[in-house]
Image (tube, rainbow, N blue to C red; front, side, top):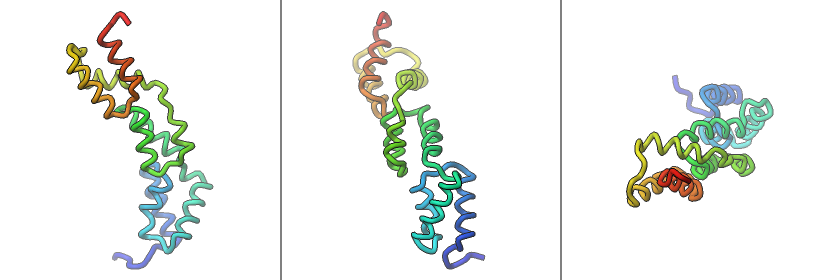
Length: 152
């Protein structure tokens, strides 16, 4: 039987814990999911504060998991953009570094293209591909110039 009114504090906490048990959430994302069921925005804020104090909700943990998931396919710029869209704070986003970005770009390029680029058009296509994945121009040029000229 569906309940018409908002959840009680206990029910709202249970709902939040069920969501957090499935996967990590950013505070803003969890607030968005729980807002329709909360009695008030103050009650929701208090619940989220309590979850953060109990270390059940952590934006840093969410960011680490999200970075790990996205780093197989995307560069640092795209990952930062995704975290910002999820409502993660700027100080946590600043910690996402481009370290290992050249190796990630190389692995992604090798998975997509089995052979080295032979023409300027093909290099340009690969540059656009890596750029769309959020890799910096510096990384793209270093990678594609080294692949085109093996002596470098």
